Image 1 (tube, rainbow, N blue to C red):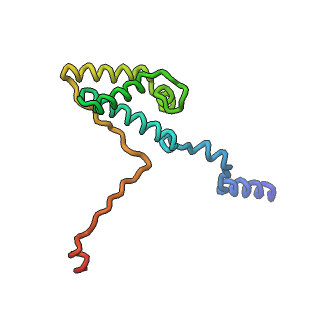
Image 2: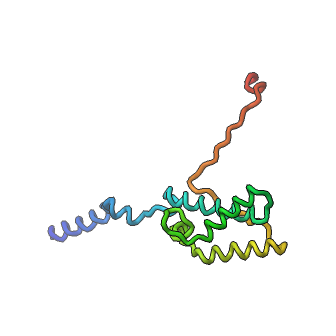
Image 3: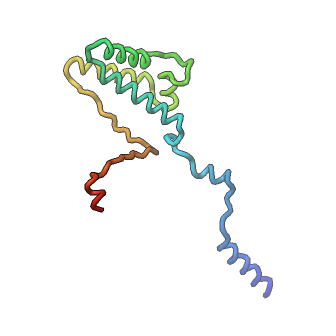
Length: 145
């Protein structure tokens, strides 16, 4: 009878034992978001800037505006993969389809030239970033406080 009681106590005690997880097991369960990686965030910022420049200066006049547009357009149209921040490599890292993105931008430009679409506003929100604002209080309020 005592043997059965000891077995029962062991079973009950095991119910309240904490589960042990090794650091390797924990890392497998909790994965870092892709946007938490600084390299990925930089690639997203480069892509966002290139698309914004392409759209902003697509129909602008002026030598500087034309040059900025042509630089963005040549970067987007380039199939070079020899450097890490090329259009093709950034698309691969962000899991974008480069040809689909190129086609969409050229379609957008054609519609814009026909008088259709205006500039697209990015729905991106900054992740892991905080905006700080510093405001100066009125000196008269500081003296009265």
